[in-house]
Length: 122
Image 1 (tube, one colour):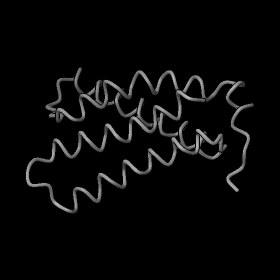
Image 2: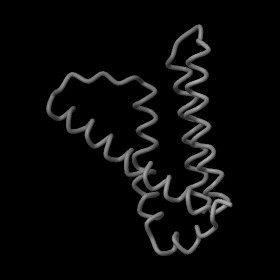
Image 3: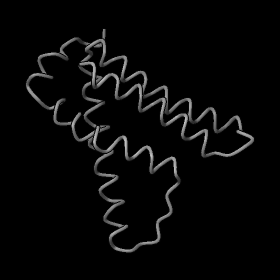
Image 4: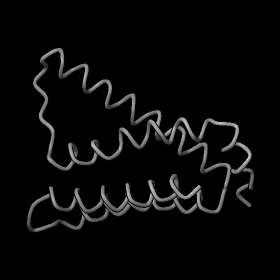
């Protein structure tokens, strides 16, 4: 239960910090607003996993599946020699997210996780 919650909180904070770093100087208010929204969503899911809320388990499963499929598709395009340009923030973030999402997806689908995340949202 600690790993899924810590992953989402760390992922949100890392994504926020890297996005602000990659946006350049000066940082626009719209950029800060967008980054805060994306980061806050990950932190909220992490807090929900910490409190063992079943809905957050479902959101985490969808997030992990979508992240792995997206990065697999990007790798296929790279192997097909398509001209893709990735920011440093995306490369660092994906190096953290892909292995974590694979492990987390396997855990969240397990019967052990189904027994842990049983609390309804209200």
